[in-house]
Image (tube, one colour):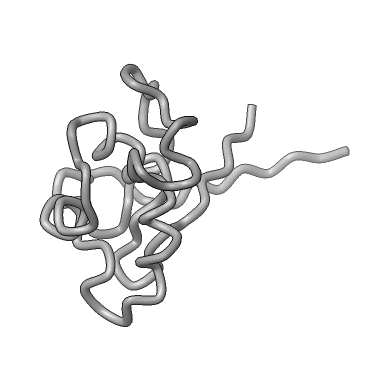
Length: 93
């Protein structure tokens, strides 16, 4: 099974699952997302997309309330990651 995660903030390697998790955990504003994840602290191009995941945003109603599942790929800025970030998988047809 392949799970594709969309990056919301390229500068800080924040993906949509992390934003959804922060919103499910109580983030209500962009200030909350900035404080918890560091979204929109560099170039700011991700602010509009991240805001869509907030309860008042376009995707807010679609965000899971709890139990987002397990993290498949850790972010590059995750200090708890001790395993290699990239796993090479070779399949032959």
